[in-house]
Structure formats: structure tokens, C-alpha cells
Amino acid sequence: MTTGTMAGIAIASDTPAEPPLVSCLQGSPDISLTGSLRLPGQVLKMQGSPKLTLNGATDKAIAYSFDLHGSPDLINKANDSAEQVAGASNLRLVK
Amino acid sequence: MRSIVKDQSGTVIALFALSLPVVLTAIGVAVDYSDLVRKRTSLQSAADDAALASTKVLALSGAATPPQKETEARIAAEKIINDRAAGSGRTIAPSSASRTVEVTLTLDKPTFFGALYSDTDVALRVTARATYSAPAPAACIIAVGQDDDAGIHLIGSAKINAPQCGVWSNCVGAGRAAKITARNVCGVGGVGSASSSPPAKSQCDIAEDPYKSRPRRCGRDLSSTNCTVYKITNSDGGSGKGGKSGSSSGIASSYTGKCDYTNYSVDAEAKGRVILKQAFIAAGFRSTAPTSSSPRASTRSRTGLSICRRMRRSRGRESRSYCPGPTPCSTFRAALRSRSAQ
Image (tube, rainbow over the protein chains, first blue to last red):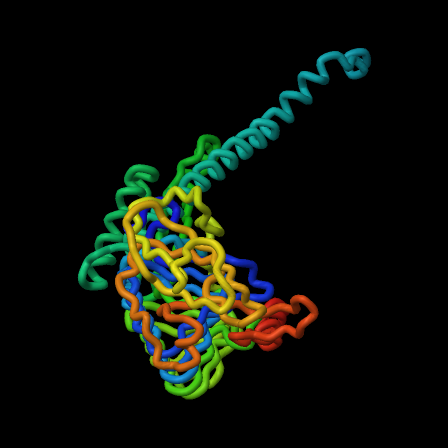
């Protein structure tokens, strides 16, 4: 698994969002990743019947927007239970 | 006799003697009041800390049942109170259902000077109530853009499946006939006609890129290591930066080593076949199927993932877009304005 500043990220691209670039998955490729997909400045466009699977427990798919046409599958097998502890940071006094 | 009456010497002493009880009383009241305020502040601080600590235990407890969690929370509060406000009366009311803990402390505080006039102590009573928000399921599919009509736009029979985490769209979580299955689905600016399970919520908080603290762009000086990198190469054998007009790209080889950075810039304007633009591919790319059932796609890319960009006006020709981009998100902006106005 990746270490360092890009730990946990499988694919990353950060570009200015004006105009957003477009990442396309076309046809019927079957992509299986362990690691996050980070495209905050890009539209992730899936056309046809591609399948994109993120397998890691904390993987995230991040894009400027998602545009899915046809019969694509975007699957994320992440389990958020490990991150729910963060909710305790919302402690506050109300009285 | 008359001289004695007219003699004013010693009047100050007389006045002082007469006013002394008043002055002493004022001083006593001030001292007592100050002491009570100080004690009350200390008591309130202890109650606040006890409530917060107890609430934290309630939030994070691994106990199986709510009563068990509440017992743990009560013990945590007791410990704080015993340390900080020993001798005070206490009522600790944790509630798993309302995610709150209310702590009430009471103390009968004797006064120094007030005791001269009354045997009754001053009863101090403070209350603190702490709460915690239910942790929102972490989003694992996030559309962070705020200028699209639809952050997540599904057409046809497209499916998003994230059963154990959330799907979040900063823009309108729109869609038509397609299906989103997730632990929760949320559209910040509203929800379109997307079919989702559970039903999508609207007016959610804006989701941020969880990796925003990471480097904005990979460079060759990237410190990340131990990558299993699938290196992008062009079909004509080229690799790395640059490419030829009309060439396709494919994931041709892999290696383990320093994370790689690619900056493909095939002549997009000429053929509309740009594949990758400033893309970084790092560890974990387990498999790709360099196949495509789409005849058009096959001429453009043999990779599983291709990244194309919007064409811009170039060399006097009209712009055109291989992958048409979105339109401005008036709906989202309107929703934000509405929320700001509230």
C-alpha cells in the first residue's frame, strides 16, 4: 500500500475546476482498485457498462461530479464504522 | 456647659463608631458574595467537565446496551465530581436516547459574615447538560463540485452501490431512473428524482474533500513510496509525458517503486483523443481490463480508465468536447442562497 502523503490513494488528479476536466470510463472495462480515487477537479463520467470497484475498507471515490450513463456500476465496499468515532468530536454543552 | 455643647472635637470618632457596623456589614456581604461566586463558578466548571466527560463516554462506549452505556457514563461523571467537587450533592442523568447527560450539583455553602445573622447556609445549585451529535455515516462517494446542475447524475440503469457508507453530493443529488444504494444518500442543494435506498436527504452539510490536506498535485518529488505502480504507456511505446496525435494509451506494464506521475498531453485538439491529463496512478491498481466494447472507445482508449478533457478554443477552431462538461448549477446556488438567508 502506498505510504507517504498519498497513502491510501490509488488514483489522484487535482486540476483546476474551471472548467473541470472529465474522466471517462467507457465501454465495459472492469476496474478494481484498492485505494481511493481522488479527482476533485474532474467529472467522472461512466458511459456504457463499465464497472469501477473500490475494495478497501476506507476507500473513497471523490470527484467534482459523477455522470453515469447507460448501465455502469460504481461500487464502493468501504465500511464507515471505523470512522464513526469522529462523531464524538461533536460534543457540546447546551446548558 | 455651653462650651461642652459647642465643643466639636471627637465627632469623627463618634461618627466612625456609628458607621462601623454598616461598613463591616458591607465588607462582610462583599466577602461572602465574592466567595459564593467563586464557589459557584468552581461548581459549574466541575459540572460542565463532568457532563462533557460523561457524554464522551456515552458516545464512545462499546457497551452492548443503552443502560450499560449510561452506567459507564455515570461512573465517568462521578469520578470528575469526586475530584473537583467533593461533598456536593449530585444528580447525573445520562440518556442514550437523547444523546445527552445532565449533571446537577448542589452545595450548601456556609458564609463567614452571614453566619453572624443566620444559621442558614446558602444553597448553591448548578446544572450542565452536554450532548453529542449522532455521527453521520462517513461518505465514501463524494461529489465535491459546487457548480454543476447535478453532482451525481445517473441516467439509464446506472447504479451506485455503497452499502456500508454514504453517498454525498455537494450539488443537487439528481438522477433519473437509476439506483443508488448506500447507507445514506445526501444532496446538499436538494434531491432530484434519483431512486435511492434509503431515500436521499436534502439540505445536508457540504461535504469536503477528505484528502484536501494532501498534496494538491503529485510531482516527481513525491515522497510516497512502496507503490505498485501501473505505468501508463502509449500504444506506440511511448511513456511519460507527451504523446502523439491520435494515439491511444494503455496500461502496459507495472513496477513497484516510487509513485509515478504522468502528464499525458496528447494533441487533444486535433483528434479529440486525449486520454490522460495530469493523472497520478499509485498503489493498489489491481487489475484493469484493457478492453472496451464500445467501438468508439476502442479507437480512443484501451485503458480501463481514460481521462479526457474539455476542448478549448484552439488555433482558431471552435471548441468541442469529447466528454461534454456540465452546465452551471443554478439550483445549487439558489439553495445555498436560501440557506444563507435563513
